[in-house]
Length: 616
Image 1 (cartoon, rainbow, N blue to C red):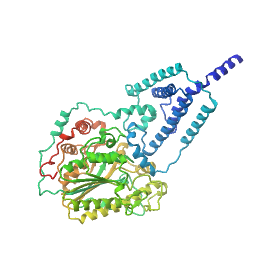
Image 2 (cartoon, rainbow, N blue to C red):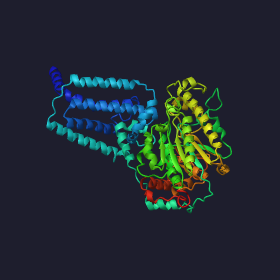
Image 3 (cartoon, rainbow, N blue to C red):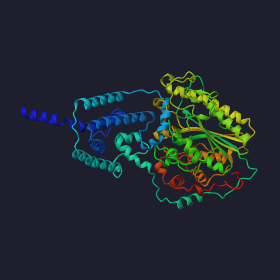
Image 4 (tube, rainbow, N blue to C red):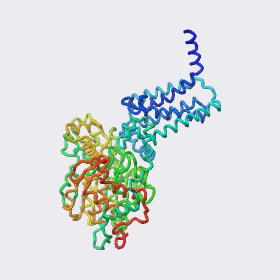
């Protein structure tokens, strides 16, 4: 017995460096998954699941590859363990803040995320502290207690060969074998927990390569478009070309559609917007947007392009990923009809790549925070107020009137109500009181901001009501706020709606179209709830501006499916239809959208009424 113990000690003493090295990938894998969600409800950590072995291939393959390339086991352990610790912490906060893990297309949005996250107050949960301490101890053991011999060429070659086999196996699991794992475009957190972060990230790589719809061809897309396009018309000199002012108000949402807010010191936080319902020359309704809590650019993209986010993978950012050349949008179509087109955003132009995307979308001018006067600009919290944003709108409108005879299309993305809501500010008073408001400080700040937005919107509409130039004001929110989940649960408590219907409500925001001239609003009394891809064509229809062939096709679908969304669809009877059940009805839309986004020759696009007599 003593001899056996002695032999075991000698074996451990002579092979401790190898044992420790081969424990490091396993420890790193466990650390990453613990940081993702606290180490519970994980199927990928059980050896009985295939996802466990797929992840093991990845971590061991990476460690062996680095050891083979560098010849330094100590450096490999410390460096890779640190890299995965940082990545796992980022993934933890990504899930905590936006309920989405890190996915490949997030790499397009690193700059925007860094700017947006400046408004959050950070807390460090116990699992981050524990894993960080564990890593430090691991590094100490690696440096001080374990002696690693110099790697010989033969050993390095063996490590390289073994890593090649493992990483090849992992890639095959994530590509050809991905059908063996849980795949959900819309439930990435669940997919991450079942598959593990490394495997799920790899499975999602296919989203960077958009596949053609079945039966796709340019000829098919052209045939579909021509089936609904009207004869080309020209705009007569007597036709009204109103100024079109569009406001996408940051996080402007009506939480009362989810349940009773329990307001105490006011009856309504957006009384003016609600008062517009039924008013003369005004169309009001609800807009279903693709974003929730963040992802402003996706709602923006749907409105401007009439492309449906339902045909992209959840978590992607089309404005970042797919706008690399001239792209048809409401701005480009109106520009061809003689409009001066201006985009305004009172924050950094680099956000969501607007400074590059807007010119390609047909905007003549893009104004960002650098175009706002520091001395006269008002800030609420740390962002430019809606009042100051609208001041820039008015200034631009008046400048266009003074310098040009052409009408103005202006698209203003505000910033006032941007999250987070976890810090109090001396320059902003949180005036709204509601039941249990002490339990929901984020919500209290948010509702107080919405009250300020409503006042600013009233001021903007009153200004244009006094102008002689025919002008239309369109306003909608981009998404509901990132506030306490418990408050959302509080609002929906006792609701008879299904989970799918509640999710659709959480992607619904108010919109209105108001004009200072007669727009025959009675023709649009039944607009109700529509998705954001329809609002652009609807706005142009109300303004009397000819639609492009693509816009006309999209607009023709509104009668059959007024809502097309990743959260589900609503048919003409207002009945909820899961997106997958509506897929066959929407297949033609998917074909023409694919052609419009990925396979379009911009020199050949026709726009009804865009030539001859339109001022373009």
